[in-house]
Amino acid sequence: MRYLSTRDNTVKFRAARAIAQGLSREGGLFVPEAFPAISEEDIIRFTGMTYAELAVFVMKLYLDDYSEIEMTEYASQAYGKPGFDHPDVAPVRLIDDRTAILELWHGPTCAFKDMALQMLPHLLSAALDKTEEAKDVCILVATSGDTGKAALDGFRDVKRTKIMVFYPEDGVSDIQRLQMVTQEGGNVGVSAVTGNFDDAQSGVKAIFSDETLRAELDKKGYFLSSANSINWGRLLPQIVYYISAYCNIVKAGGIIPGEPINFCVPTGNFGNILAGYYAKKMGLPIGRLICASNSNDVLTEFIETGVYNKNRAFVTTISPSMDILISSNLERLLFDLSGNDDRLIAGYMKALADEGKYEVSQAIKAGLRENIDCGKCSDTKTKETIKEVFDTYRYLIDTHTAVAFNVLSDYRLRTGDTTKTIVVSTASPFKFCESVLSALGEQSGFGGLELIDRLEEVSGAAGPAPLKALRGKEVRFKGCVKNDGMRSAVESFLF
Ligand SMILES: *Cc1c(COP(=O)(O)O)cnc(C)c1O
Image 1 (cartoon, helix red, strand yellow):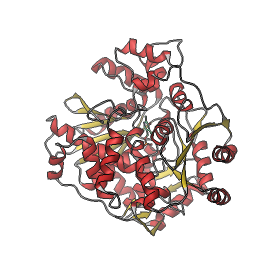
Image 2 (cartoon, protein in one colour):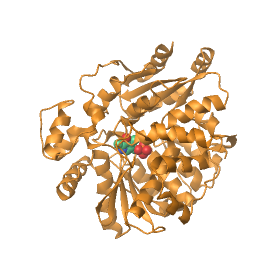
Image 3 (cartoon, protein in one colour):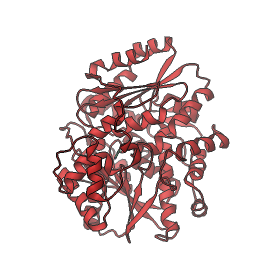
Image 4 (spheres, helix red, strand yellow):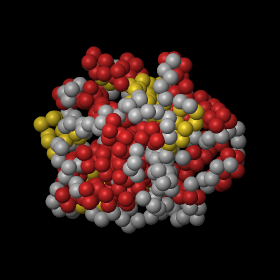
């Protein structure tokens, strides 16, 4: 299997090279040249596999330069104990006869990013050996909250890797910040950045395209790579849980094999929902993929009109991991819908960089309509949804999952679609205690970790052990830099 760049499809790399490098030199994203097919018989066979076994099977289809033995070892390290606290790894919970919830937050950092970031470091570390790379890798991450901690945890003390995480000063919850600034490990660095997620992300992108820094790092034996969801090694593990979720509903008798189901996905950088699109391309019976946005509804507008326009006010919401104006992974979808037209995509991305907007072709608009539905949800409605779901089902959801839940209700009213639907749940409600408590009508005066105790009392649900263990941990990283200070932060971390 070879990987093309979305902006130059004469680039043809093996998986290990694409994973080691992260991003193509001219700025494009790596995509597989073909999508392996899975059949109905495969799906029936998958129902007898553990999550780790399924992960090996699915990922091997794309990673033919990794051995079965390697993949088996990585999957058992990534998805075994003690990291994940549930035997199904990504359990599905049926809450009524046509709605289920896919819980993707049973990993060590309590957010769905663990699904991929417990796997990526193994793939990357092996990729360095496979590509005979002499230099060590320095991972740079811009995070809107959850990625940073999940990447730090995944890469902690992995050989031949260092990791530096930048998070926006205004835009992560107390608990998210605490998770990051207390990170242990000898190869990790963390810094706040003034501003919002896009400031942090554009800073990281500028560092990646800084040729003088690249040369300096080269001399000192490092090269830069990314753990953001632009890395193929991060996206690929996410395809697995769409398939496992489908199989779990088959096993529970909720659907017969071959029956289509919808997924409703709280979306930010478009990585999660794109993995669902790829699963559908492989043959998984998915009907509609519903893309849920918060008030930063640039994607909703795009899917409805075909015009992507990031020239708008950035809104800080109570679902901060979705506070994004540039959804990087959308580029991969557009590449696919255009029939791998690298020139066209390079043109859109240039327009986005120069003017902040572009409009896609009629063919792409038609492809969007055929595959993706969308909707948005305000903070007020997000809170109402948390309360409604709790009152109706005694089931607690976080703010991101609530956005998806609300968008699904609207979608059903609007379309009358009665297809069974899985709401993708992306974070433990205990990561966003303050908003969840206020949604339940609790105006507490608590802060930090006391919020976890309070939410346990109010909801009767137990908070996840990794969050409760934050209590009493030493704060290791106190720095905050401006956008233009990020480069020197990287230099002083490495040298
Ligand atoms: C990252 C994240 C999202 C958005 O996922 P994308 O793959 O970036 O679209 C949604 N919810 C939570 C809790 C997240 O951490």
